[in-house]
Structures are given as structure tokens and as C-alpha cells.
Image (tube, rainbow, N blue to C red; front, side, top):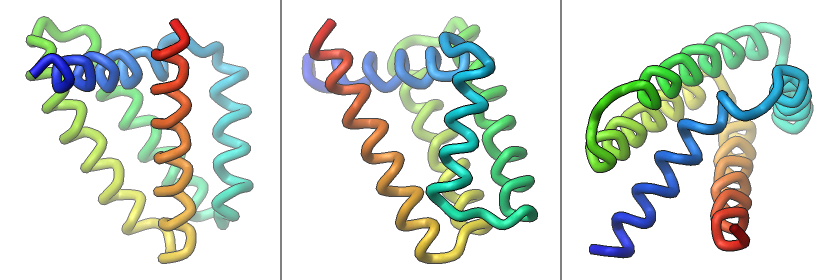
Length: 117
């Protein structure tokens, strides 16, 4: 149970702090890097920007909510699943594999940061 609560706290904090703690310039740099790594077309880029804007908006609302940590974690998982589904519709198979690899890398980096704090 303690391990589950730690994971919940980690995911919630990571999700809630992602869009809030970084300056806009850093976020824009990450988006450019994202586009390059995924080799997005102009049309895909616009759609991905829209998906990410909606995702960050939902994360902001989640952070501001008065829900319990468990409820926030569940809602975060739903938000993440929605984003993944939308991304899968926009990206081709190879791009989606790369997207999943990038997500796994980001998750790993967040875990390392949490352990070092």
C-alpha cells in the first residue's frame, strides 16, 4: 500500500508540476524537440499542439482540484489515456512507437529526480 501511495504521489506531482513549473521558453523548446524527434508534418504538428494544450489545461484543473490524492491519480491516468488515444490517431505507427519511448524516458527521468531529492 505504501508503494502504491508513493507511485500515486509521484505521478500526481509530476503531472501537476509539468506545465506549471517550467518557463514558457523551456516548454516551447521541449515542443520543438518533440516535433523534431517525431518528425511531424505541419498538419500533425498543429494537431499535437492542440492535444498538448488541452492536456496541460486539464492538468492545471486537476492541480487546482480539492480531490484526494487517489482521486487525482485516477483522474491523471484518465487524462493520460485520453491524450495517448488522441496521439495514436494523429501519429503513424512508427511515430507512435517513438512517442511511447519518449514518454517512458520522461517517466524514468522523473523517478530519478524524485529519488535524488
